[in-house]
Image 1 (cartoon, one colour):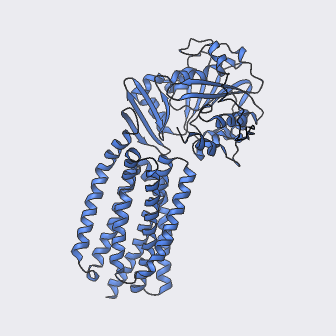
Image 2 (cartoon, one colour):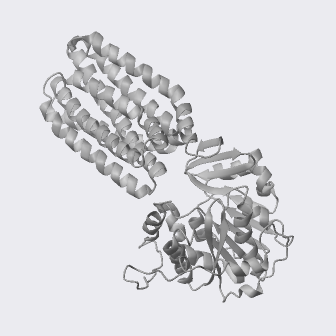
Image 3 (cartoon, helix red, strand yellow):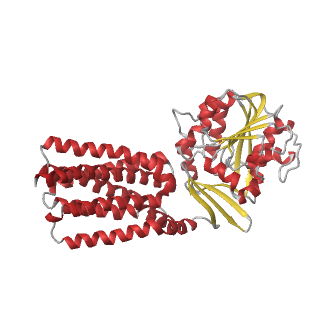
Length: 516
């Protein structure tokens, strides 16, 4: 009898660690889901952690009322965690495709709170059971708590470095739910002599197990069909990289690249964007031997640069190897970028742009900043005074930079705040905007160490869209997109540079784009 109790006690310690691993994985999974589908990663992770911990507190409080049938209660808690957590990602993608706007956010927050409450119920019940069959109170409690906290660390590392990049969010949820179910089944078997109506509990495990296994093998394919409904054209490539979801679509010759749901280019009109990004600074700079591209992993900016024979070296810094690998190997992208990233003049580095500028001691004639919009904290730091100061320090006198700066029409104060931030570093700026049908009216900020004379820009290559007259017209802004932003009283709103200490640009961006 004593040996059996020791065995059960040891298993409870292991079970507490395992369910803690599952709990922390679900917590960060819900944060990742919110960040991808709802945007604003800091906001979503803050809400996720807050709701999950609040749920745990309420669950722990409710556990005081559970004095009998501890093992049966624990088993059914695990059943619920497995069922709700397992189908969480799958259901979230389905709601995003079919449910009314806002329903997906409510669902995610409700699930987060519910799993948190169930997780809060688990630990006190395990501690109480361990005390019933263990040695002394303090020792049993300490062991269960140790297993719980250590399991939390393991769960976070597993999700960040294995589950999300290797299995994706849908399959990861089903996989972790299977582990919860396995713990429940193991407890069910080990404590079978204490359980009444054993067959009912076994039947519950079989039904839930069948649903989870079906989800594990077929859920991702069904979620893919849900996600397909979010895009106008058929998806021809989809992957979850270590940094983002990468999706390529194609319909009737129009190839489109999406990163975390945001359109990066359409092959029908990307030339308007990339000609504006590349040719003005290259034509204006006194020399163009060494060029730096920050972002641009699709290879389209590099394609335009390689048309200049006197461009000798192109350094392309893009964080995500999944994007650059796709650009170098996918047939559809190769047709558009003309295999530019495999050119001997191009050096591709998969690094963070901020850290690259901090560590590099090289100067460049031309710098092109072709980064996604500042829609999360990681990207926001690449639109700060600190980042543009680093850019300035790598730009030679007589050189020129061009920065994509979102839409001056849809996000007017965002665009002009970016301009203000660049100018705050001591660089001179000039403003351009161009109509890109797939994007709308899109803005760029050109920068140099000396005042920029647009009249001095002479295009030396044939282009599909850009001419010197068109370039001149790009500097003219309509009244509803010009720099002077008025408040409700009709008074100009002063613009402040975006900084690491005061990263207000992301809030402006979120507010500006919420209706588009």
